[in-house]
Length: 423
Ligand SMILES: Cc1cc2nc3c(=O)[nH]c(=O)nc-3n(C[C@H](O)[C@H](O)[C@H](O)COP(=O)(O)OP(=O)(O)OC[C@H]3O[C@@H](n4cnc5c(N)ncnc54)[C@H](O)[C@@H]3O)c2cc1C
Image 1: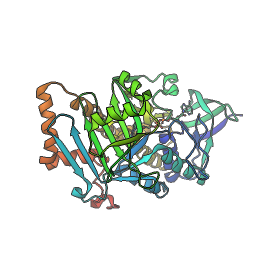
Image 2: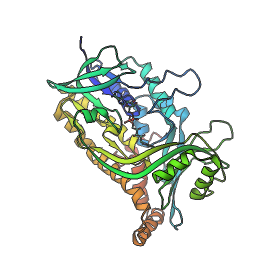
Image 3: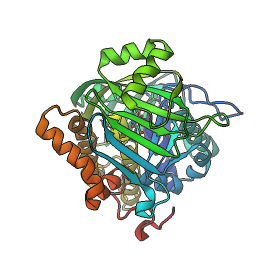
Image 4: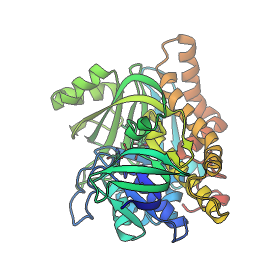
């Protein structure tokens, strides 16, 4: 027998799990929602760190104010708060250049510029929330291996679940940057490789970070250090995202700890004192990958499957969450008008609504690392002036901060009246 669900989300990573919760919060109870995840989802936590999961891995994520608003609405924020380190300021500098800028939440009347959470704890909060509600049917571990149009909806083939056949009015493709389903559906991508890897690790310092995030641009790529909560009393740790040439990244991933710390200290300097220790190191090849189609009759492509960005400005997941809120809003509206969930005109309405935010965010994270790696002296000077200009020109600084907080897509920033001043 073939099962049916109104909406099937293929991929229960950070985006698929967040979408399932968002849809269950805003769509009428009779709309059935199913989440299919290829990897076993972590079990609800009984003390200790959550089980490993490929989406909720060793990375940390900087959540913007726009993401906070979304998670507050779907009651994930309360659970998440205990794992969040607020970002009170961001120090932006360029190695060997004169420009630098300090962006402070207090200057905007905000209580923080963002929040850092380790992906494992973010995953834990999402999975706990999924297990708490009984609205979303979870099929895991199981993979959607084929999808084809059937009438106005889609017919899916699953591997590993109870039933190999599933029909749906709307398939959400959220299976990550190397999306097998996107390829299987014949959706092409535009790919711009950065010829760089992101080396990710947690680093312990002698001095406290005082909730300051650091973005240091060097001629060989940016170094970002995001403040983390201490895991043991008196510890000062930050999450490193170090963008490097592939060969150098691969070497630094496996070299001895002292060689690693020496190289990082030389590149970052002593703003947080001496570097004491580095945790597990992981490498991610970097590319801007954009799906050439995001909607079709009965199909929407979301998250990294739709757009995977350079991580330098911490924008990819925050953008995906705004897409999620946008899709849920449009679907709620369309279903109330009596349209089926997979209606192409409805999905196009969603895309029109998100397009400007997607374009602006993708451009911001694509241009930033390039600008700071400029060797051209004229452009280098422009960059240095831009950095000092951030301090000199309040409007430029404001624009930068608003984009980073994800509030250019919204009516006003945190603490400003139209978003309720929740901070
Ligand atoms: C180093 C680094 C740092 C980053 N930092 C930030 C940051 O600070 N802020 C920010 O906003 N963004 C950040 N990002 C971006 C963020 O990590 C991504 O936006 C996010 O991981 C996308 O999640 P996703 O669910 O779309 O994809 P994934 O995390 O790849 O999840 C896809 C899921 O689909 C499952 N799956 C795959 N195939 C199938 C199938 N056929 N059927 C069913 N399930 C399937 C997989 O098991 C997986 O769970 C960073 C990225 C990197 C690389």
